[in-house]
Length: 431
Image (cartoon, rainbow, N blue to C red; front, side, top):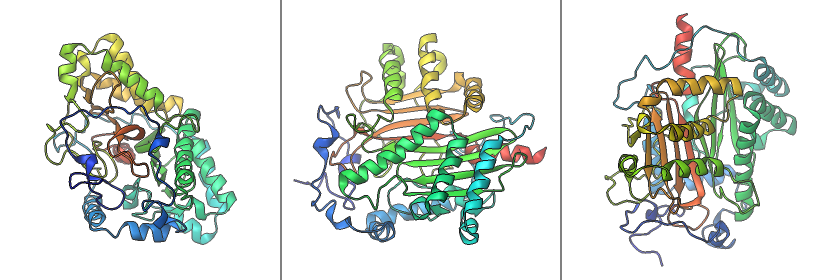
């Protein structure tokens, strides 16, 4: 029975996800299948047969969602500055270096996409490089902002061209991860009997600037549990902000696990901590620790701080500085960072890893929960040039009221103003 302490906020979100509890949240031995709603339940049946537009209209109606949308709109309308630790953007973090040509393959793929679109669609998908719509991306399954074109509404040649652009821009394993996130969204649509609302094409794509090997340009793809913002400037490729999630992220062999490798590295690192290291790294003993201050848990974002509309958030460092890790522990930390940067092609990933390495001593590891893998956890790796999070979540379309490993959100940001490649673009314009 739903109690006052565990009530539905809007028909999908439960207050239990943000209600502190003295007892630790432990990982269930049950699988995601044990938390599937009956197809004719009141959670699923009212949405069946709706298209995404009507579904989104209804999902936005509750007072709880309206309040969230109002908060997010106010954040969206702020001038962009970038994530900082105290409100001041450092100008010594990012260095574009000598300008080089942008890679040709993504340019050709973008031009091919534009070529298969009609005049109206071509205009709808194209934005100036500095357009505010960059920051309109979101990750819920309902639409907040319409930006560009929606894949499921495009003819097949245009969909193939859009996906070819994504493939040409990412590493092979990075493209596989992005496509798997889209595939898991479709799998969730199958599990819930709502394929018109959640499928592998319920994503928006947009182009920014003119595709060019000489000038800055980029593209954006976003929808449920996936948001990619990709910029090419001066021979550097920036992929940030990134949001990748899945429900279920673990599907018992039905689909490949999305974050198993990253989670294994994270637990290996956390479990290797000495008592002294653990006392600094573990910020909260549980993902619903009552010691968390008011407002630390967000009813939609739960613990992650760098999701949609959080472009200017002040995020103080938490946890253990990387210079207090052993050589082996720093190798594990680098492995986790490398997995966050997997989307980048090898040469670009090496450059991004070097950006992190320059500031590694000032990079922090924060952990919420037990360090032995027995509990859901929240991980943040945060330094001047990198902010990556992994957070286990309660169910939205599954019925688990508290976080479990089969619903995961991850974020990636480039603090101090290089989300959307803006710091590099600014430097390129000064040369």
